[in-house]
Length: 78
Length: 194
Image (cartoon, rainbow over all chains, first blue to last red; front, side):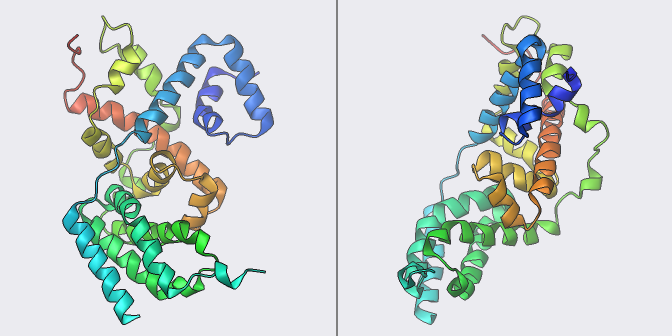
C-alpha cells in the first residue's frame, strides 16, 4: 500500500503511461479509496491539457517568405 | 533492405522542408522566442547539408525537428538559466493542487482549481515556461505542448529515456511551483469576477 505522498510523486508518470505495471496498479489501488488523490489526478489532467492548449503561433507572412527564399537559394545552389 | 524510392532525394528536401515550416517555426518560437526565424534558417541549412544521410524519407519530419531542437539548444545555452539558478529544494514534494486548496485564494469559488488555471492567458503560460531552465523546459515543451513521444524526445536530445523521464518529472513540479509564484508576484490571485 502506498502513501499519498508516494502517489502524488508518480501521478504525472501514471497519466503518461510511464509507470511499470506494478506501480500503476499501486496507484490505482490508492485512488480507489483516496478522494484527495483523485482530486490530484483530475487536476494533473487539467494541467496537462492547460499546457497543450498553448496556442500555436501563426508564422508571419514575411518570415515565411524569407524562409522560402532560403529554400530557393539552397535548391539553386544544390 | 530499403527500397531506393524510400531514400530522400535533393528534390524531396524542398517539399519536406516547406511542409514542415509552420511546425518548425512554432517549436522554435517556444524554444528560443524571437530568435525563431534564425533558428529555423540554421536548421534548414544543416538539414540540407546532411539530408543525404537520412535513410527514409518518411522519417524526414522527425529528423528535421531533431536538427531544429539541437540548434535551439545550442542557441539557448548561452542565455538560459542554469539549473542551479533555480531553487530545487523541496520541489519534488510540491503539489499545486494542495497549495491552491491550502491557500484558498478564492474562498467563494466552487471550482477553486479550475478558477486558478483560468487566471492565466497564453502569454502568462509562456512566461512561466520561460522561467524554467532549458534542461527541464525543452522536454516539457516537446512532450506536453508538441505532443512528441518520450522515446522520440530522448533520441532527439541524445539522452537515455530514464533521464528524459526524470527531467519531465522535475520540470512538471517546477512548472507547478512557478505557476503559483507567478500568480502571486503578478497579482493574479484576486477573486475572479462572476
